[in-house]
Amino acid sequence: MLNRFWGAFSHDVGIDLGTANTLVYVRGKGIVINEPSVVAINQRTKQILAIGTEAQVMVGKTPAHIVATRPLVDGVVSDFEVTEQMLRYFIERVHKERFSLLPRPRVVIGVPYGVTEVERRAAEEAALNAGARQAFLIEEPVAAAIGARLPIQEATGSMIVDIGGGTTEVAVISMGGIVASRSIRVAGDEMNQDIINYARDNFNLLLGERTAEQIKIDIGSACPLKEPLERPMRGRDLVSGLPHQVMINDEQVRQALYKSTMIIVDAVKSTIEETPPELVADIMERGIVLAGGGALLKGLDVLISQATQTKVYIADDPLTCVARGTGVVLEDLETLESVLLSSALR
Image 1 (cartoon, helix red, strand yellow):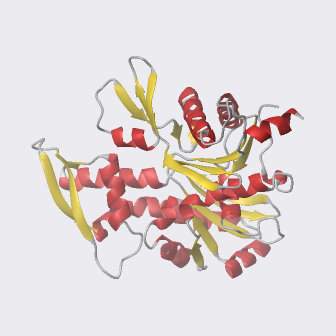
Image 2 (tube, helix red, strand yellow):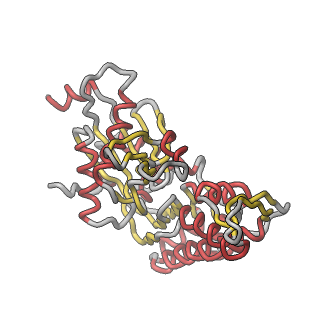
Image 3 (cartoon, helix red, strand yellow):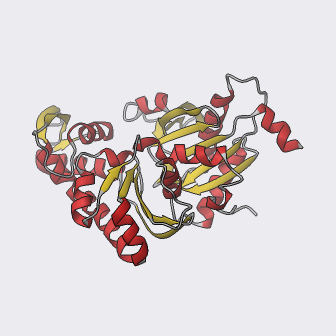
């Protein structure tokens, strides 16, 4: 009875709590929030100054006492209190346009595969303390597969590679469960760091994280491109200490990203090696699906296809796959309850 009462005043919410971005799906409305998982804090007063896009603008541009931080590291909660504040902010934003003095939604949160009991408990408690009346957890590769419309509840093998900001999740799913998987801490953030290291080692140039990410988006690739690309790379010269600009091309960026892309390819291959042969046959027929922001790296699908001798597809709108998957579960919670993780708080 009380559940129905709170339901009348709250939107059920699905959250892709990512290392780089947080996406919020509202039942019946779709994805309404897509903002960076960044929080700006005043260290002197411990006051939160900005969350999401506003905080992202401050990264690398604040005085010493203001820190723009990510409360999630490798997809799991590293700063409990800040994560709780961030979740509360997003939940309250969703309910602003609907009169609700005390929103108490049901929340489905995507978490990396293989998280520990402690990490699961942290995610659940953060959601409950942020105002959720019920918190459900779903493994990100399962949510991404649902969001990509793969038939995960059938007796057939579906393979998903979800490349996020902090983790890459590779999973073979059948009958609603994960049969074989890999979760590695090499993804978008690691690629940004590769570019920073390459610029430092080869050009004596110190780059910021946002600059490195923009270079990756603009000219980053995993395979040679038909048309060469280049762009300016601006930073601080480590010898003179002055601003400096050099031109960088796609081949140099590809060289910088080589180690990370090969680790992802190896994770895909080793997951296939662990998969039962009947499911491997299904994967050969249906192909491998790429999701997450890392799926947009030019030529990564071609590289994985060449390495595995299997068709590889990029999911429609790969950035939102996990959030859409949590939304599908929300829309039919009773039928899809079996794909959720059991609560760590019971």
